[in-house]
Length: 315
Image (cartoon, rainbow, N blue to C red; front, side, top):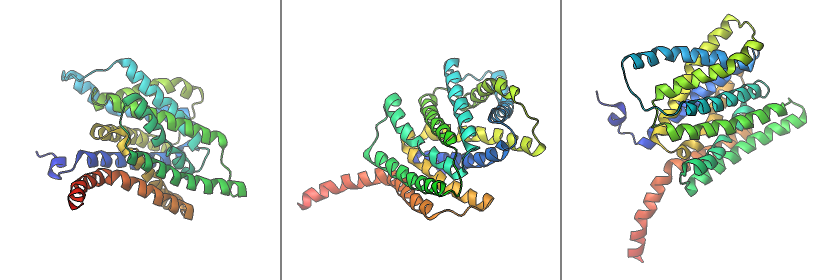
């Protein structure tokens, strides 16, 4: 059967972008569910139940792979422990902050991830950062600051309050998630996607088991269903990210994370009847420009290189 990617003649860069955007859609959906469940049970219990269901879903596939004698490249188990620990701490901080600040605020703070990615990718992966990527990421971040500034103004005016501890927790989680993205990119071609998904869920379940048992609250039926959905979509998010990183450099898709602002504004309007502010629209315009720069950067470079000989001949 002809691979769909070849049938559509999609470039690897665009395939990577598509997988990355899919991860953003799923991520926004998860945030909505987690905020809803977070009003009933604690962060540790959410994380434990989510990743336990994720692990149980993947377990039959892992056992089947082992019984079939399928050998896959194996990295050190300590690497999986490190990845899972970064994911666990990041999730704890994210759940803590998400339950204490407005949804849109959390999404905007999450936009600091590309900045951290640019730094970590340069330090650990030695990736070359083009001028266009740097400019695009800065533009997107400026758009985010415009939105945050409007929210801070609203907070000063007393329309609603923002928990400062929640904001700090979200910033720390963004740093850990970006570092996790860099680690995943470094080893995505050395380990099977199934193993990376399974070990992440398994070790996060272990890390969260004791803290969750201490403050365990019997969840309602609706909360149990929501947590089960989190387990499924959580696997899908990581799968989409790993597929994206297998096609493109991590810094190439970093500015596209700003599309999450548009997604969160849309979901907020549909679910919570939140009407986006003017500053959100202005910030979104800057974000759109940043993504277009990355999308057409290579084409612009090629066009300029083709124009140079013509300019010399005409001169």
